[in-house]
Image 1 (cartoon, helix red, strand yellow):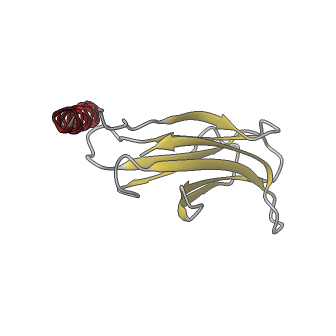
Image 2 (cartoon, one colour; image 1 turned 45 degrees about the vertical axis):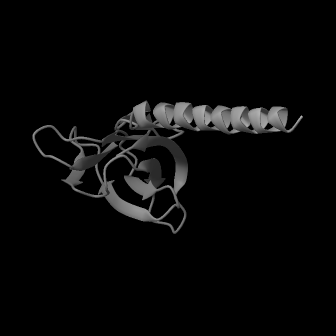
Length: 138
């Protein structure tokens, strides 16, 4: 009877060891999450748009945000990039519908971090309007 108990214990220990090994192999081969751009994101009223480029070509570690005012209405468009805790990383503001956009590019945040891009209409009041947002990864 004691022989069976030892065998059952040994099998239990071996089984748990095998499960642990299998899990460590799965974790070891899980790929890192890739950087993810946020394509053109429009304000709710379509008067402005913004873009997030997670990996600026030719510039290692750099990200870019771009804001474009696409409606002649006296209001500006603001793009706000924030981290997963809603802390603002960078903002860019475009003030005129002149066919060009305003952008900034730098190493804003460590690679592979979640980021949120928010685009809004800024009409000079203290309240941003017609906002839209999306998530990407630096």
